[in-house]
Length: 295
Image 1 (tube, one colour):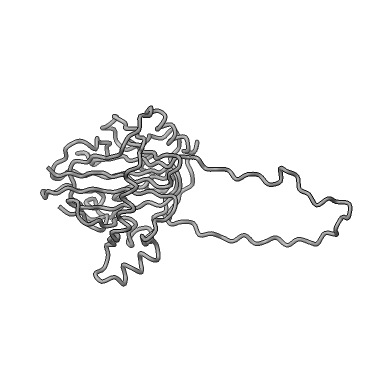
Image 2 (cartoon, helix red, strand yellow):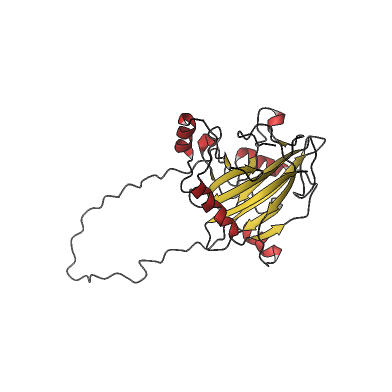
């Protein structure tokens, strides 16, 4: 069993289990901490998932002011205010959807057993702006990067706070390309989800990834070097606080679908993810995984 490198190709997967190391914390605290940063109302659409380009601010020109000999060379103590420290814990939400007999996307328990012909899709939501990476291994083999992808979003991977991101996209041209499809082949797949406030060192994105895939022999996909991969996997040892919903079987709402396809941020009253994972307040990176096991 092998994952196609292009996310919109047919993929062969089976039972899914999302892994994290939980801390003893009340679920409502985790859910509340994640959802509290959702806006009260929906945000404007975001059509491009690339990091914003910094725009230099012009220095204003000032007319010279004559010196006042009676003025003391002092400043009020409250002129310089201490910078605010962002103590928000980094977190992501994951929801697994399956295609039912009517063609609808419905929430499913990741631990259920799937069969040949079943179709699933993963919806991801972060509680802050940052960079999303998705890697895949088959039977604990060499890792391959599925996202960012030179064919998607201009090889960018910058995602906005609470703007959901789906894998694969429901906007694909053909129905068969909108889902991860279970086939008859066996094998153990693992999807790694890496979300970071800063780009990962040694991992190409945007123009660098496009150039690599254009010039590389053999061409893409991109495989991380052993040192880079070990650094990513070392983040899996961090303790994650989790909240898992048991409400399965409900269809994806129109609000969720619109937010995903139009790049609109979800509001507080919108449905929460099925699984929420949050790192400690001192961490700027979160790594978790989803096991896809074919029995």
